[in-house]
Amino acid sequence: MSLRFEEIFQLIAKELEAAGLTDYLRAGVLLCGGASRVPGIVPLAENVFQMNVNLGHACAISGLTAALDQPEFAAAIGLVKFGSLKNRRRAQRPFFKGLLGRLLQQS
Image 1 (tube, one colour):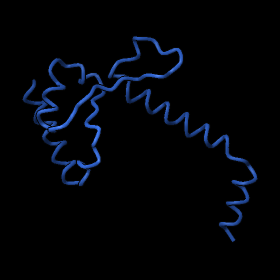
Image 2: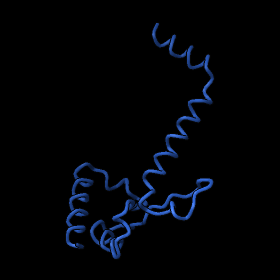
Image 3: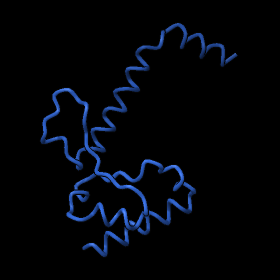
């Protein structure tokens, strides 16, 4: 199974390099999802990517139980947090400022 993971990581590394995104990964690679719990996957990924690799965890959510603070829930909880933040920012924007701005853009 580790050979398949290594192949997948190599494909991802090639895609990142081809897109010119490798330099943007200064903090390293974050693995999330159920497969990130496979024993030995972090050192394997570090070997392929040649950078730090960490497991994703969902934290800083009120009422979050330890059962949900696992890598397989990190992406979903992160997306919920992001959506909530965007929604709060939209709600804080004054109505007239947003309306006036849209009217001025149309003219």
